[in-house]
Image 1 (cartoon, protein in one colour):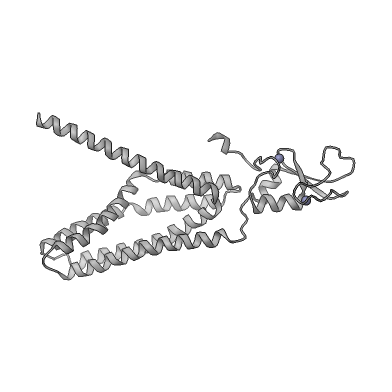
Image 2: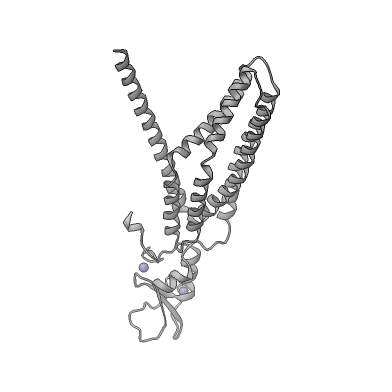
Length: 278
Ligand SMILES: [Zn+2]
Ligand SMILES: [Zn+2]
């Protein structure tokens, strides 16, 4: 009877936990989709730099944690033993992380090299989606660790050298979490205001559009360019997009490469269309 109750309670708890995890993952993903759609090129750069700095700082902090464990391995106070257990779990959970870092890094670099903003967004989402769930659980443990260490130290009546060292280590972690967010937001703001090429590349324009010289008897062309409202003059280079809309070559090149790779008249995309498959 009791075993059945326990089993039922365990099932309910696991179900609730999975529900919470999925709900949280869904919200986080919606945030990624929005950011990658509005700022694909900026996001790719920020994600890559974020990972680079993160790998460096996390490795440094983990090395320091390992050093503290090694130095105080012979600690006998009850609170020190609890702290050692917390630190060792953290160190073990860190071991497989370089593998996922490498995979994410490759994803972000590949995203940055995509020829259109839509493909950058898709590649970024693929990379974020490919992150294994255990990585999130490791992160959850890290926050649990950062909360438990001071809790153990403050509830223990004796204050040992290990506790003092570890408290300093935790403070370095708190500062780093804050500084990391600050760097990401700062970099994003700088990139947002830079004169980046946010649209399609030369290669996409060459592959998916055509250029020809304007001649007065080309009846299918409009009389003026819809971007600069200037009239077409004989022998002027005119670019025609996939949607058959035409513009001055210089006008549409600046539009498609600097802004969005979409036709200013009908919003059709310039380049390969993976969007429709979504
Ligand atoms: Zn024009
Ligand atoms: Zn068009």
